[in-house]
Image (cartoon, rainbow over all chains, first blue to last red; front, side, top):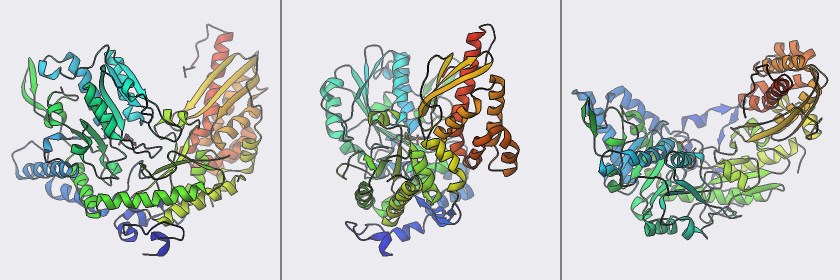
Amino acid sequence: MTATVSRPEGAQEALPLDVEAIRADFPILSRTVRGGKRLVYLDSGATAQKPRQVLDAERAFYEQHNAAVHRGAHQLAEEATDRYEEARRTVARFLGTDDEREVVFTRSTTEGINLVAYALSNAGTAKEAAFRRYAVGQGDEIVVTEMEHHANLVPWQQLCERTGATLRWLGLTDDGRLDLSDLGTVVNERTRLVAVTQQSNLLGTINPMGPIVARAREVGALVLVDGAQSVPHQRADVAAMGADFLVFSGHKMLGPSGIGVLWGRYEVLDALPPFLTGGSMIEVVRMEGSTFAAPPQRFEAGVPMAAQAVGLAAAVDYLERLGMREVEAHEKALTAYALERLSAVPGVAVIGPPDTVARGGAVSFTVEGIHPHDVGQVLDDLGIAVRVGHHCAWPVVRRYGVPATTRATFYVHNGYDDVDALVEGVRHAQKFFGVG
Amino acid sequence: MQLESMYQEIILDHYRNPHGRGLREPFDAEVHHVNPTCGDEVTLRVRLDGGSIADVSYEGMGCSISQASVSAMHDLVVGRTVTEALATGEDFMTLMQSKGDPAVADKLEDSLEDAVAFAGVSKYPARVKCALMSWMALKDASARALSAAHPTTPTGGNDS
Ligand SMILES: Cc1ncc(COP(=O)(O)O)c(C=O)c1O
């Protein structure tokens, strides 16, 4: 490992992960961009690149075992079903539960959240009394935060519009944290569900689940945690977290696109009516009406995405081989270094917590005098991939009075050299536009 | 280095010293357009004098490309008839779809004047929307201004 990758001068510590060995696992990192430049991929928060192990697992499934899961009487159907269910067990273990019935495969975080939101409004009109337990209606309240990705905001706004419930939210402090000072009033006896992100995709803030879950329990509200930006980067433990739902996407954790997970406490899942209906999720179908399977099948209508589930399990195996504690420590070291180097550049302001306390590796910043799109364009010209814009969290940029930000996000294949490239790129943008 | 092909000096000049910026009275129509992928915004007013555009005034926030584009557009359309301005807008759209083909830029140079400098932007699909936002706003605002002047004429203006 070369010095600049693992530990340049000024960096606090050597990186826990062997970056060069990891890079060799990611075929895309060996291509060049924009006329022969090394790809510096700092956009894993949008979607992560895939190691060969994940690609191989998907290919092997298609080449050896492909069939429609849970259907068919032939050997391939058995093998495909086995692999799909094995993937479910792998994910359950990764989340710290041994009850794989609590793992529902979805298409994405977005679909998982919509599944819960529609189940709660369907509960209001369900003909089966058992499905009405969590019904949301007039006079009820749903609580979100001002920090949410649109995926964990718009479905709740829509749920409220469908049911007549009221949406309330927790605000943010100036240093990019949740303002919990009015938690006791915002979450109250009328609250049916609290939906909160574990880690902000824009600010990088890691939210304290303890007090939120505790308050929700006091008033009997459900808690849904958006784990899209946390599950890929830190050890998940659904038992310790104490929430009712945890949702995340495979594509942000080295897995394929088109596969996500809704983890739900079995007792809660079992009391919810379905969202999508059709094949595979039924118990008995007659022309007059149908009854539904138990979870997780109740929430997996249609032929499931088996190869993607197998790919996700391979991604979990890959991350577990690296060790989630090491992954977290690795990103923390990179984040500390990035925060330190970026804030030393005149005109650069980090939006979000200024240090690594309760903070993950999404680093958003503005560059005085240069719009983020233009920063992103200059970085792109140097082979550096970042995201610019409002990052699907429009209320957050509005809260901090900026139209948009430039965002770098880190993952297992990033080294200190990537941070150096970013900082030099920002300086280059300043020179190009004649500011700073 | 590809950057210079996008950020032509003329573009950077318009960005640093925008022409016609600010919202002015009187006006016949005002529209507000946003680019939902990045949050860029423009508020644009049109004042007509008969069939001609007497003034285009605007405020907005956005990247250098969107801000330079509205400034260059101001220069191109003020004093022209609405029909001419919209035809120029079509030419600009053609330029934005040219994927950097120099033949297209050559052909449109007379029509687009300074705005032909945006040819380099057409190589970057993500930025084409930035350059087009002001032209979309102009099309919308002129349609509204015309229909306000002739209330029976149907227009293609949409709410935004
Ligand atoms: C915090 C957060 N929630 C939800 C999502 C939505 O994820 P997906 O687009 O995979 O459904 C994202 C990612 O874009 C995110 O960062």
